[in-house]
Image (cartoon, rainbow, N blue to C red; front, side, top):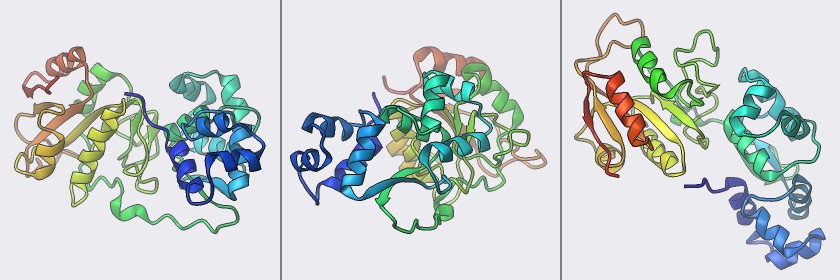
Length: 300
């Protein structure tokens, strides 16, 4: 299923209490069809900027530095350790297209949005000259609580899925220290729970009170096209398990108790690898990679 445009929806939300599409087209000097397309997440960045200015709004990002959007995105890309070539390949666009966007040149809204999603920019609209609120989502964010994924399990999953595109619960943004070498790693300061996910995602969520929200997020992002591989406690008595795991994902109940972190002590609970959005072939490959796990298939 194609992922809906959050920027298009945000534009519509800003416009609705102020004016109609026809009125916005008139004050912007563009066609009504162009306004409609922008609210669907399609169109040129020139038209996008024109419409935002007419509405008195501008684009910000929770993880972006203050300044021109292209420059701020480029800085965030570099902080994530991604080259232009790598990111262009992830997004399915040319390096020339990426370079033009970062330089503030001509481009498409679609490219801007998937760029923002890929690097975890947290794009949103705000009134011009509004003071950006300090991001304080740490209480809902992706802390690892010491349960770092065992290296052998990471290797088994990477043998099936290759390098993951995203780890929204990374314990470290440092590629050398990160156990899961995802192309993009979101830490507690980025709050991966609030970001859209894209591609093949690995999630070892925090095991506290937010766990149910993370599992719901996994199921929701899979419904929008992502393949999400989660390592979670096998809490089959919980509401979130029955709402978002049973029948919705391929479940691999792991034998015994995992040894997280430095492997000194086993966990006080059983664990499961839960895969949302997997093809039948991928599910079979995970089963082969985890031969001692009990596979409970998703309902297709």
